[in-house]
Length: 99
Length: 295
Image 1 (spheres, each protein chain N blue to C red):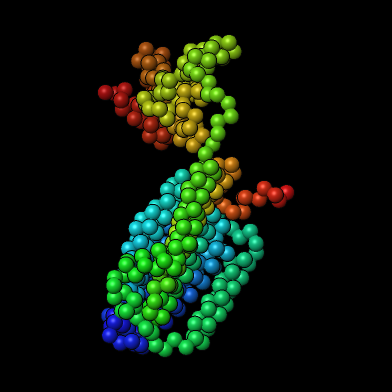
Image 2 (cartoon, rainbow over the protein chains, first blue to last red):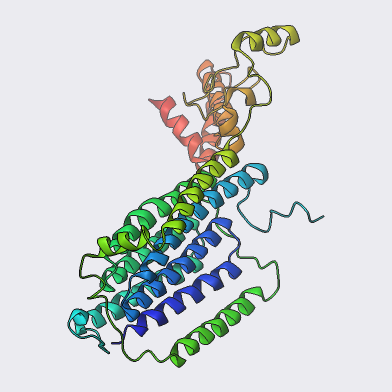
């Protein structure tokens, strides 16, 4: 088996995550799909690191994890705030600017 | 992983191939469950499973530090944060399956399919026949190699990351903090206001009074047999978890009156016999009362 298969798996996971972002309407599940996409990118980075024989890819994946952690913290805080004011986690209900 | 010996290998070990195909299937199933499960808790658990599989893949790819960090940070911290928010927002809140835009799901699935084909075609076109392996890069230890890079080549990005994390922490606190706009009323002020308005000066009626059960979800009965809404906690009332036994109590009262009339001889014994025959065809509750009276 060639490690390129890891790249195909990463592409598949990224596609599933992207489709989930478009299909689902629960804001928490949307965030989970974004996390899935970030993880797929991490897998691709780690595989590239192995393909090229240097550790730069792993460093980028490490930074991606840090950014993902920060993103989740702020995003979930926003979801909790929206839920407090609108009593719903559905992204369809957060339509304050729409009449 | 014999990447340490061969400078440019083209295949991995058989064991890693087996591991890839088995765990890769698990990862894809977990990802599909994440987007297809109706309840957010099930999605979160599926995603946690996928992330653990990805951690194993990191370890197999020679990223030992990232594999451990993936489990500790992603499955340990981030997914538990997700579950915490799911509990906060409501576990029972399932996504509605009603489509607000007609045909959106199928179009989205179609777009996803096209996107996936594009990605795979791009990877397939790249010439990635051989790979170097991390044997040389990891020779001094994976963590040491990463540390050498983080603190030299990527030190500026590392510093920026610290600023980002602090900003995120402060942002989360600002977003979830609620400022109290007015002072909370003390207990004394509340009691004085109750007396002044003359509404419910004594405590609220207790639940279960004059009812058949002494439970907090059963409203107390007023002298006329109706239930008192005030005697049940407002939360239980809001959830609709109030059990009403006023009908049973009234039926029991009627049965008692009937029995006492019979005992006092105000009704003919033939009439009670006929009524008893009719009652046997009626409710079983009446029969129970009669049995109790016979005892």
